[in-house]
Image (cartoon, rainbow, N blue to C red):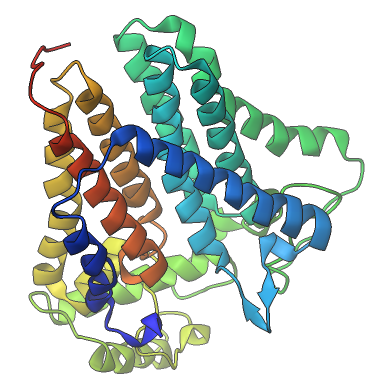
Length: 360
């Protein structure tokens, strides 16, 4: 099972595919079409089947007694697909490929709806942030006619979030004991999760009573671990002992006591400094910023490489945003997707012959 690997070893799952593609070209349009198909497949499985047919809480599907896709992983993968699909919309409309333009926009809206119904607040924040960045890009490029359709996922998401509150006459009652409630009175799952955080401003260190305050306590624990061993971190076994000692001493909430040595720090950066210290942090930053720098350089071109650069930047930003509340690069589902998407975009940029080097 992939979970048996040390998190870093999970890259080996993607490495086999990467080696296989070393001597093959990767066409950008093929990658975009595959991403669009993935978005539609996700919509069929998790919205049409899980939400409307099974009425599954937070889109969880039981397959032979197992959960088909962990809800948070589903949400974050959907944001990655959203980040590519929304750039596909810009690319295909510039290429005057109008059928693919429509499909791209539908794919972006499909993934944003999956995020809304999965209750992934970190991914939902990513929809907002990426939409704003795209709007600024279009304004700078003076492509005003693209603004409204490009922002349609954000507009529809806002309508579904707050429209449900306006048209519902029944109050939602959500407690910390029911964090996985999918919808109440047909409200999106994310609204039920936001309702749990109504006392968030009353948070005091050492107390955990909701999803976000539990995260705050994990972050505090990771920071104490970092202070104890700043260069190499505490690893997994010593980290677990140190974490439970903090809980026993009341430094963090007593309810935070854990039995899993590889428990998540619920933040990519806090988690890595607690387990691997500054050395681990350097590797995590390299995983983000080395490919980010490559994709930034593609923006100077006027051909497809410009949009490859945009897609790469948006995809990496989607992982960085979600990394503020979860450890995506420590999970096999998302780590493999990040590796493969980065490689395919990198390879598609190299596939294009350098005939046009015109700055936009």
